[in-house]
Each structure stands twice: as structure tokens, then as C-alpha cells.
Image (cartoon, rainbow, N blue to C red):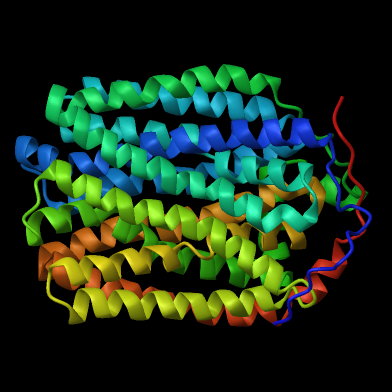
Amino acid sequence: MTLDMGARPGPQDDYLIGKRQAWFAFAMTFALMLFDYIDRQVIVSLFPHIKSEWNLSDKQLGALVSIISIVVAVGGIPVALLADRASRVKSIVVMASVWSMATISCMFTSNFAQLFTARAVVGAGETGYGSVGAALIATLFPVRLRSMLLGAFFAAASLGSVLGVVLGGIIAAKWGWKAAFGVVGVPGLVLALLYLLVRDYKTVDLTPRLDKVTATLGGTLKHIFVTMARTRTLLFVCIGAAMQLVVVSAVWSWLPSYLNRFHGMTPEVAATQSALVVLVGALGCIVWGYLVDRLTLRQPRNKLLALSVLCVVTMCIFLVAFAGTAPGPAQFKLVLLGGFFMTCTVGVVSGVVIEVIHPGVRSTGSAVLSLFQNLFGLAVGPFLVGVLSDQWGLQQALAVVPCFGLLAAFAFVQSARSYDTDVDRVSNVKLAVAT
């Protein structure tokens, strides 16, 4: 990998709508992603309270987290397709309003089935948001800033998880665990209305063939699968991103419970300590996005090889932490270190998908990535650890899951082989700002 600090920007390497408006769009999109994950992750710090009050199994607790990712995966492509051909901004406004109201409704549930249903509606509101927001940011900003800004955008997920975990523990201790849902759900409604001030980019005309095949949902899905089969980079990047997120979601969801059970911390203290790990992960999103971009300017395909190395490093750290170190301060330091490495893929993979997909369906391309990340990554981690925990114990479950990082590394190596060819295929499409 070669460091090239003097590379000149290409013809499209500029702000599409002006620097000030682009940064306003980023700030608003970042803020909504922040509250998206506050609403999504607030529940993990409430696990001890819910388990005690409703006598739930670890599998049921994990399902309360995984159901959101499953719904997001199923609905992400249709919503992103609609956003691509209509309006990304208006789609985001609707989605943010739905997930915020669904989060508030969680405080009125009285059993597992009701809470599970409300959490599913939260997922319905989030369908397509990450992919649509990523497409908007990637298009409005210069290419040279893409991975770093997408890393920062998805770092909002880590920061939101931090705040969700911390706020959930604090609010539950003072006013009861149900009140936490009401407190964190309201700000999203306010931000949703303010998002109408964000400038969109003009919907890109598709080629006659692409316009025809994407006229219906069935045709679009067929085109997506054909495109994935032909675009090897997209396929293997989606697989690699999902495998790494199995590790991330498992640690994020179960670390508060692990610290409560094995380190003897109260739920509030365990939530605060877990928030540090998530916060370090948010920093890792930005740092690795920036470093990988800067170190691979001359050979962009090397960013995928760099991700494979980072995934293996993450696996090794967590294996030592959970399989070779007794609970205590030394173990927690290793978990912190692993938390910094484990989010290395988030911003980079989003940028790669944008680079190999036709600009007219960038939201849809990002939704394909989101489908893999949610259905085979974020949904798998919490539920799998819950199932393994019921069988083997939580310590053993967290020691096994990091091995998914090896699968991620293999997929990224495969994607590097076709990266240059796939980028060249879509590199000449022009973009313009919407009126």
C-alpha cells in the first residue's frame, strides 16, 4: 500500500451542492443516525430488568435486538428503490417519524409479544435509512472524503449505541425501564421535520435497459441478483461486511450482561462500562476509514486487503480476551482494544459499494449491503450468542463468535480481485443537484 498525499482530485471530486449545504446535510443525516441507534440499542441496558420482570430466556432477549435487523433487511431494498426514483430526503423524513413513534410505543407494552411487535415496527421505520443516507452523503461530497465521511456517518451508530446504553441504564434506575423508551424516542420526531431543509441530488437517468428492468419490484430484485452475480466486488464485500458485523453486534448486545454476570457490576455500571467499548468503536470507524483511504490512494483495491488484515487482528484480540483471559481489568482492556478494531469495515465497505454501483441506483446498491449487514450480520450476532449462552454459557458464546472475522477476511481478499474492473464499468456517469 502506498501513501499518496499529493493526488489531484478528479473531475467529479468536488461538492455537488456547495460546501456549506453539503455539510448541513451531513450534520442532519448524522444526527438522525445517532438517534436511530439510541432508539435501537437502548434496550440492551434494560436486559437485566426485563429478564427479571418477565422471566425471559437469553434467546428471547437476543430476539428483541435481532428483529429490528431482520425487518430492516427485508424492507430495505424496496424502500431504497423508491427513494432512488422519488426523493431521498422525503423518504428519510417518513422513516425517522415511524421509528421514533414506534420507540415511544414500547413504553406501553405489558408482555414479550407486545414489546417484540413494537420493536419490529421500529425496524420497519429504519428500513432503508442507512442505505439512503449513505447514498446521499456519498453523492454530495467529493470522492476523496467518501470513506472518512461514511465512516463518520456510521460511527453515529456507535455513538448512538453508547448514548442508548447509558441513558437506558440511568433512566431505568430512576424512573423504571419502560420510561427509557419514551425519553429517547421524542428527539427523532423533531429531527425528522428539520430534515426537510436538506438539499437532495437530482434523480439520475438510467439507461433504457436499466430503466425497464427496474420498473417493477420483481424486475428490480432480479436485476439486483444478476448484478451481484456479475459484480463480484459487491457480492464479496457484502459477505465480508456481514461476517464482521456478527462480531460487532454480539459484543454490543451482550457486553452489559457479561459485565453484570461475570464482573459483578450493577446493570447501571455495566451499561456505562459497555458504552466505553462502543465509544471506542465509534472512534475506530472514523480512524480506520481515514487511514485506509489515505494509505490506498494510488491502489484503491488495497483498501479491501487492509480490511482483511484488520478483521483477523480483531478476531485474535477477542479470542485472547474471552477464551484466554479471566474476568477482570486486564480482560476489559483487551475488549476495549478489540472494540477499536472491530468497526474497521463500516465506512470503507459503504464507500466501495458506492464506487461499483450505477449512481442511479446507489441507494438500492447500499440497501443490498444493508440487507446483508442486517440479515446475516446484525441479526445473527445477538440471537446466536443468546442461543449459545443458553446451551454453553455466555463466556463460551462470546469466545466462539469472533471467529466470524476469519470469514470476513477471506471475503475481502476475494473482493479485491475484481475491484478495478467493477469500478471502471460505472466511472463515467454524470451527476447534478436537484432543484
